[in-house]
Image (cartoon, rainbow, N blue to C red; front, side, top):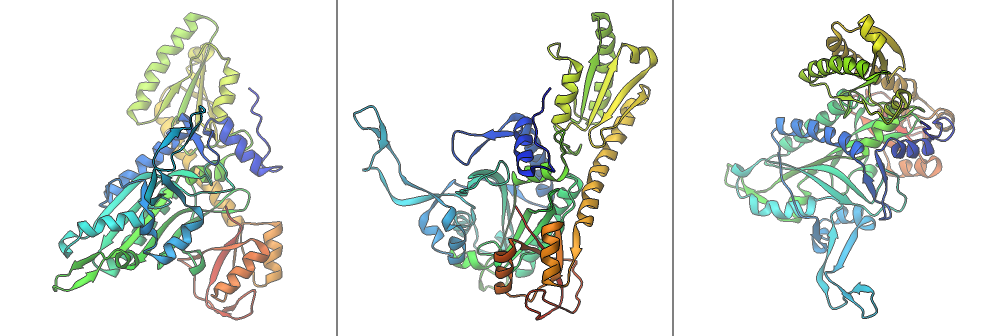
Length: 490
């Protein structure tokens, strides 16, 4: 099986695109900037959805659904919000097509909408307009709602999963009686995302706050998790926003407090998207294909029979039936690839490309010897092991693989996190090594913008665990009290 994948070291961008397409995750669609997520790729996204959805519900949230279309006037009500999304909005202006008499379908100019509709780039405006009708007193709070949906942000330069005009995500929108409750919610959801990234995606992340310049449009504070990809670029893997009372004031959402006073509601929003698929690929995979953490793999174990006669096949089948039943009882997802249209070597290459964590090969000789061959995708090592106790061994091995993938990514991040104390050192590390650069910054938007203009590096976050220390800004020499993380980013 010819994989036709570019080398990571020679052309990282092409390697990524090749891998997404060859591993059957997604493909470009007939609509410019949009993608088709194929069944195997969608299976991974469904795993992410299921795990996150369970965690949202465990933290008291319920799912709802709000319209895809938002009246344009809603965006005018929160000035910074509309400014942040104005250049990315798709606008619906008409509601009917007609035949022009020459066999062409055209827009019916007489069917113009009285008010244009925006295809949602995010849902704060439509949701807060709705919440006005849901909230009267403190007894109606908190509202803890999540929505699984698609959004549209009209991107000119697109990449599968990382940046597409339409993408899938979840967006949480909560309403609270106090500032303290809203901030606690914002922080709680950041922790949910970080735990999911590290324990499910096997992706080490830095928890931090965004600078004023990098905050979500309309937020008072944006918290984020930042991850490092194998090319030394950062990727924002999730955000949680404290919105203060901005949207409540814009849409006049008030409640009567316990003291009988009319007060504005406090808000949060938070979300992750199919961009996590890109993070998963770029953080772990190699030149042979995908490397999937077992906790996310749609197929955790693939079993390939090796036989010459139908009698040998029947013997292997009986063994596989028993093993599959044992593994399924342990909630391990198994595929028995007994297609007679492909040779074992082709199957090995195909499942390696698709990142299946563990491959079991079993043939007639194995049946005689009471053994099987196990091949790990993460280390690409093979070993012959006894059939006895195999289900327990596989269960433990999958956990070991999960931990190893995380540890490898963590070690890479540690090796590519560099402290610098001068602008010359900053630029040298950025060009020769990449990764996270920890340095002092004077706290001004002007300095942040100038560094970005000169180097294309941005402040990814102010780490929540950053220690206070006296220093001087690498760019201006002005005083600073803590280090921030810069990086080039997706």
